[in-house]
Length: 293
Ligand SMILES: [Fe+2]
Image (cartoon, rainbow, N blue to C red):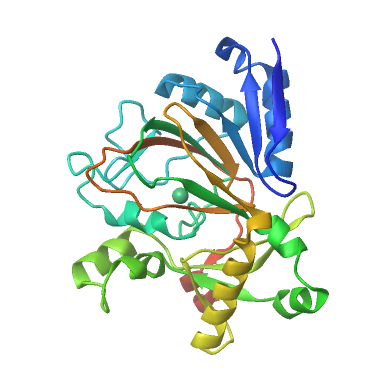
C-alpha cells in the first residue's frame, strides 16, 4: 500500500492520500501521521468516508480516547460511545449553545480538569449549503513568530479560562441564569499558562474565547492582549481554512492549533462526527484549587 502526505502551507496543514482505506490502521501510516500532526498541525484525508467504527479504530491507534462532551446533546446518544455528533439539527441538539460557541476560536476541552485533549478527529457526514468551513490557526507558529520582546513580556502570564466566557458572544448583554448555571455545571474555571512548553520543547499559546482573564492585569488590558494574540495567530501565514467535502476526515493537534467554524444555518442538517484522544500533560489547575493553596 502507499500513501502520500503533502504540506498545504509552510506552517500549517497537510493532505494525506491513501490508496486503500483497508490500510488505514497500518503502523507505518499511523507513525507518519503522528509525525505529520506535530509538524503540520492539521491533517486532511479527503473523502475517506469512515464509519464510526472505523473512525474509533483509527482514533484508538493514536491514543487513549476521551469523550469530554457526554453531558451535552450529541455526546451520549450517538450510535457508538465516544463519538460526539456536532450539529445544530434541533431533533438531535436541544442545547445549541455548545455548538454555537464553536463559531469562535477555541481549543477543545480547555475548561475540563484533565489533561488537555491531544488531538481531535472529525468526519464530515452531512454538510450545509453555505458556510461550515473549519478554520485552524497554529498557536505554535504564532508563538515562534512573536518578537523576542513580546515573548519575554508574556513568558510567565497565567490566564483564567471559563466556559461562560466562550458563550458570551452568543448571548446579549447578560447570560440568563439558567444557562450560566448550566455552563458552570459542565465546566471548571481553569488557570493555564499563556505560553505552554510542550513535551517536545516547542512553545505554543493557549488561546480561545474561553481565555477570559490574565491574572495580575487589569481586565481590559488582559483581554486586549488575548485578542491581539488571537488575531496574530489567525493571520493567513499561520492559518488554514478547510472547505469540507462530504466524507472528509480531518485531524488536528489540539495542543498546537485553535479552531472555529464559519457560521452555517441551523436547519441545514450539517453533521460532523467527532472523536478525541487524551493528552499526557495536565496543563493547568482549577482556580479553586489554586485559591485554596
Ligand atoms: Fe472544537
